[in-house]
Image (cartoon, rainbow, N blue to C red; front, side):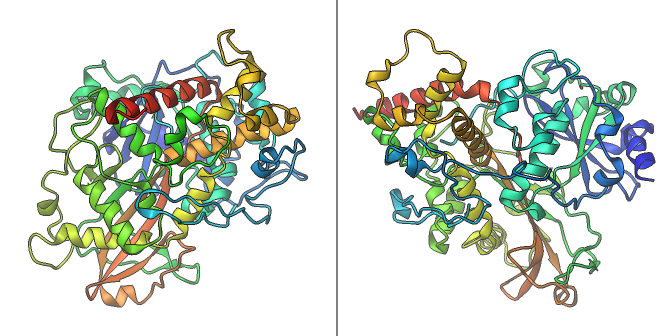
Length: 542
């Protein structure tokens, strides 16, 4: 049954039932709008042609009956495979060179670190368990893939604790396995949809391209016609629009269908790094990184490059502070200057920006107040405020941000330490820093056993995903009798919020959880140096 269904998804001549939703450097996304109830509330993420070539996996690689169930339990091999066991930064910092298990999912307490500075000074990291921006190119190995795994040998070593990730043969399989086995357990499986790999036939994709080409934004059309890679695509939940069907009740059973009272409103937020680094690997010349968030530093580089119209006042420390007044300030700043950190969708349609079209979406959200008509029963001019209040209510003190920051803080040694591990393992240009000039903490990092060095690289890459991922929060007004069927729970991605005497259905999900390529570590280091230099230039700071 599942096998037949999954093959039918892209084999039927149903290309007219898919609507363009968006695209990036590596993938395009289309949303299903047809009558098939099995596909309702789904989007299809398809790799662009020319990104890389990959051999489709053998049919038995995908147990279709298991993948059809979107609530798959995390399955790992016996022993240590699949367990996240980070290296303890305290061990390196104090001169130790042995591998020490530190906090993630194995029950060890996390050393509380101050992540303050700015307005949210003194906030402690969550006892669980910088921002990397490179949107111009995909994080996929750009090479011909043989019959073996997609990742090259050293990357396979890095991800050896997650066998299905290390063995992935296509980009789609890699995205699916990484989200399912790495980010899902870390952030909460209920909030992460790894998707369903489905075959994507060339004829279907050609017809689909013809249907959606006219809906593409001008900046993408300027780069040429959309070309999609046949082989495999990823079918995932459409987080930007409510499916309007059944949702899980508080007891975990299906039920609670409700009639819509108005539009569904989805807000996508890219929180970015919510802590200040404390790594002793950071050079004294770059001490500003210990005092300013990566986001604030990055704003000056974007301004220097002409990518933004104005520097944003958004401070990630406010959002992650757990204090309602600080979270409100963060949300206000994002709405005032969204850039590419906030998007709003009404019934799945993105609200346009007011500014010029460029490589970055900048400017305020145009016509949002009017677009929210019917969403809430309030006076004109106050609908956006209601939406902001719902966001604050769901995010302030939320386990969502606690878990996300804990994942981000797996970057314990900063790119300034990690780059030297990369050079040690992959070879270093002759003009790099001589070992005697390195900070003592970096020297100790380089003295770790190889297995521990690979652990550090793996944690850095996981943290990079967490710093660059997004949160999608969807709200929809519901009748009071329906609201009574639901009970809000931090552990559930769905529930009902009460605000101003009204009830709103809410669902939350993490998105953009792709694995970052370790081969981009040198680019991350170069970007890090550029960011610091731009900040010093922009503020005349030495």
